[in-house]
Length: 246
Image 1 (cartoon, rainbow, N blue to C red):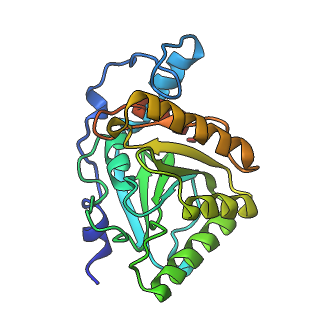
Image 2 (image 1 turned 180 degrees about the horizontal axis):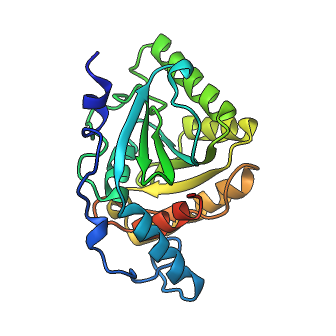
């Protein structure tokens, strides 16, 4: 296996990003990125922009609980099926084109990858689940590592559970929600690749996602719809995460 840092991220240190160059106060939008809102939402969006305009650096990639970095500032983990678009979302969210490696091969990420955002929030890229072609022993290792991390990490504030807006919710997605319920870890549903769905179908997917959130005790009620290609929902997601930052 190659160098985890080379595989997972750019070299540690400051990375040029596109968030810095956005308008100081982005056009406020609803959680799904559609309807204008006002009031405190404007301040929240600006807080998100400022946070993600800061330095983001690779910290560590690990394959065992023993190798985890010490718990410190608040952590937010990104989870989802293989090829759901986690790496693309992380790159779009941070405005860095190659922070997380984008691969056309599902199941490529086999590690927990940690990124420090301005010393205020740690972003954790979890291994993708549900990749049938991965060896059974590897699948078991991934699932065990993720569950051990999720249930025993004191600094973990939330898991963003990504669902591909273009396809049906899979049994592995439901199993992941149940695992988060059992672990008593708050998770928030995020729809990805929304640019590939027609508006009526996207509205139905959002309705389904809200129903899923209501059905799970650990789920956050807000569902955010995103597109890494068009940046839909990125400002709303940054605002949600800024609320967790220290």
